[in-house]
Image (cartoon, rainbow, N blue to C red; front, side, top):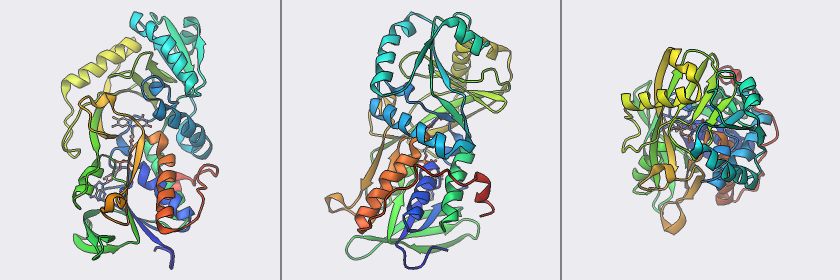
Amino acid sequence: MPKQHSPHAVIIGAGFTGCALAYDLAQRGFAVTVLERGEIASGTSGRTHGLLHSGARYCTEDQEAARECIQENRILRKIAAQCIEFNGGLFVALDDSDLSYAPKFAAGAQACDIEIEELTTAQALQLEPNLNPQVRMAYRVPDGAFDPLRLALAFAASARQLGAEFKPYHEVTGFILDGQGAVTGLNVTDRHARQAYQQPADIVINATGAWAGHLAAMIGLTVPVTPAPGVMVAYNRRLIQRVINRLNAPGDGDILIPQRRMVVIGTTSFKVQDADYIPVFPEQVEEMHRKAMELIPAVAQTAERGAYMSARPLIGTAEDERSLTRTFKCYDHAQGGQVERLVTITGGKATTCRAMAEKTADLVCQKLGISAACQTADQPLASYRLYYSA
Ligand SMILES: Cc1cc2nc3c(=O)[nH]c(=O)nc-3n(C[C@H](O)[C@H](O)[C@H](O)COP(=O)(O)OP(=O)(O)OC[C@H]3O[C@@H](n4cnc5c(N)ncnc54)[C@H](O)[C@@H]3O)c2cc1C
């Protein structure tokens, strides 16, 4: 149960962002309740590629996101080591277009403070014998791979140890306002008990990722978030030990990640109206297969394990969703005299979820006149196993 006499923050959504925020706010002395319409990480977070970004993927086109990624990569290595494979990554050039991108890449990495090291092609092939033997250039980068469910559960377990309450299968259906236009609670449906009830709150945080616009619209607000899905294809053999990236501007099928005994290629990027219904198009699966074989030819002899998808919450509404930044944004809906005691956090990456939580908790504290510093960057998270027993 929430702590007595502490301000009560109610978070909607238990993906990486909601779980990391629950931990941060609980550490700052809030009573925290998290309402999630499915299971923990049942939205985008449970179906992510699992790349602990070094930021190198974004260092030429999206440097703000690249800097956020490398900073948080370093922090997550310290606090979430239990969820991470510290395997590093390579950026490899296969053709002239890749080679001509290399100087821009090296300059971008330096500008964003990402340590890269140029390898000879022989070194790259020694590290990754299944790499395309036509490789013409390679850089080593500090990428990693994380286990998505464990990462979400580790933040949630840490939050629970501090008294936060998680309510999976509790769906928010509306907002309750007082006469001054401030949110005082939420209308919720308990999907297990099939019962509707009202959840009071001192402040509400909408951490619903690709659904953030949908939640905001319930109360007549606009949050410019574009749900941009991507398809990933998993293969049944661990053909690589490191993350393999194509040395070129971000595009479809340019990252292969080893996950347990598999390798996963991703991703595509397109737009949908409804993040609840994302088709997996056969032509996108075929495209991923082709791109995977370019980097790792042995994929051709490897059985497909499955194809899956989820929707990125991207900030903005551009025609070309690939051009939208991977950074995040926190919205105080009191601005412009709209709605008090409601904050939305969306955008970002799994890799930056702790920083997203920190910025949001700073805003929440500022709104409620509470001075409590963020402490989530130093202490290791509780074991993910404790979520179910804590
Ligand atoms: C294809 C793809 C690959 C990616 N790969 C990577 C990667 O390799 N590395 C990386 O760092 N990032 C990656 N990302 C980005 C990362 O996965 C997302 O940024 C992150 O998962 C978003 O987390 P979130 O908590 O904000 O949203 P979500 O995980 O979607 O959480 C929002 C939650 O809100 C819940 N919700 C919605 N409506 C309601 C309601 N009415 N009531 C209650 N709950 C509600 C949903 O069920 C959901 O669980 C990838 C994204 C995609 C799409």
